[in-house]
Image (cartoon, rainbow, N blue to C red; front, side):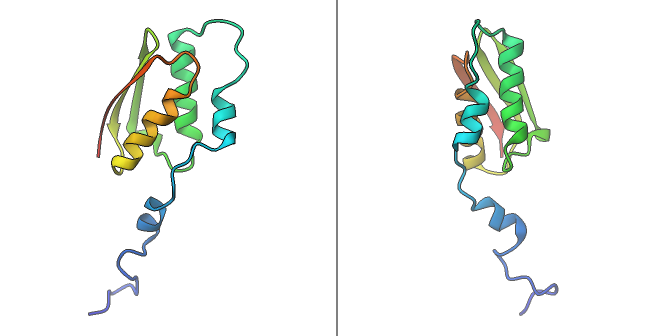
Amino acid sequence: MKPENDEVPGNSEYSVRQSIPLELNEEYISLAMNDFTHELSDEEIRFNAAYLLRVHQDVDSEEINLDCQDGIITLEGLVDNKDMKDFCTRLCSIVPGVKEVINNLVF
């Protein structure tokens, strides 16, 4: 039976988008690795990590809450899948000053 809207299952914009490899390319790494000359405060670390999540095209950061205490980032909220959960950890971990990322995201 052919789908009503002529879409082939598995070829929707959503499913194709989910197959995009999640990479930390040079652009995102350079955004995180600015030349900081002082020890960053928790607020600066939180801001930088939130910025990276917000500007990455594959991350829906509206569903993610981020906190930073003593250089430890805690992520909470909703993401699409396990790959995105893991990717958010990797993205936050490259921010200068981050000691650890506690990922409580669910999918």
